[in-house]
Length: 163
Image (cartoon, rainbow, N blue to C red; front, top):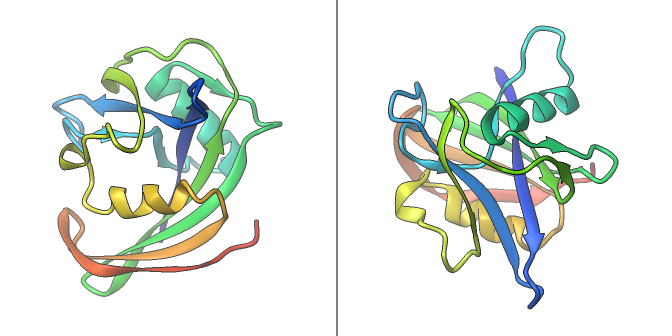
C-alpha cells in the first residue's frame, strides 16, 4: 500500500476562528489538477513521515513546518473498489518558517475558514474530513471510492486514534 503525508496548516484569526492554508494544484498535476489542497504526497525511499511532511510542505507552499509543534492528528486509509491503496498520515501544522506563496506545484495559495472553503473545487471527501479535523481530536478514517479517481461512497468510517 502506498503511504504518504498531508499537512493541515492552520492559524487563528483575531476572533479565534481557524483558517486553513491551501494551494490550488497546477493544471497539469497528475493527481488533483486545479483542485484546492493542503500540501502532501508520497514517501520517498527511506524517508520518515516527519521528513516527508517537511519536504512536501516546502515544495508546495514554500514554508517549513516547525516539527516541535507539529502533531500527527489522523491516519486516513483510502480504498478503491474495496481494496486499500493509500494510507495518508495527517499532521496539524500551527507554526512554520517562511511566507506561503505559489510554487511550481501550487499556482495559487490562500487562507480559508471552513465557511469560505470552496469544497466544490476539492476532493469529494474533504468537507467531512475537515469538519472532523476541526474537532482537534486525533482520529483514523476509512474512505471508500468506487475508483481511484472518484465516486465517493458514504459514510466515511471514523475511529479513535492515539498518536
